[in-house]
Image 1 (tube, one colour):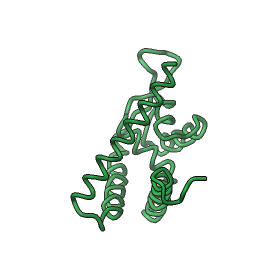
Image 2: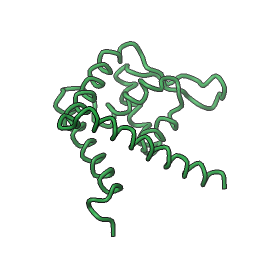
Image 3: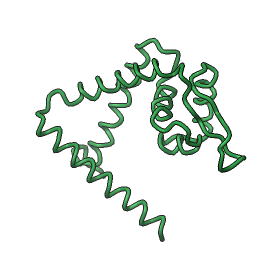
Length: 150
């Protein structure tokens, strides 16, 4: 049984609560997007030009779910699917200029949420937490890479 105060439980529960709060803030912001679509737009904004399946992997969603998100974003004129120059069967997703103002607002909401999340911490505590999470992430990436190599 996982203890509710264990590091793994606290990380998972914190991520769940952060996502729920982000969804509430996106919903109350009046965008024409669901929270999932807003998250997809954030990822596309950071990785414009990559394949749809790479975006789905980055978000941890199924490719069909991502397809629905991109369909909606494309319908709103925020993104576009273009042929991949290295693989004619694949399509890359790129941001359109119309998305920039909305993406700027979504990024601002995310920054404010992150600031609110750590507002009770000192600068030293924030830096220690940041470094600890980077170390944990690197360990997990290493574990994953080790399994893939086997």
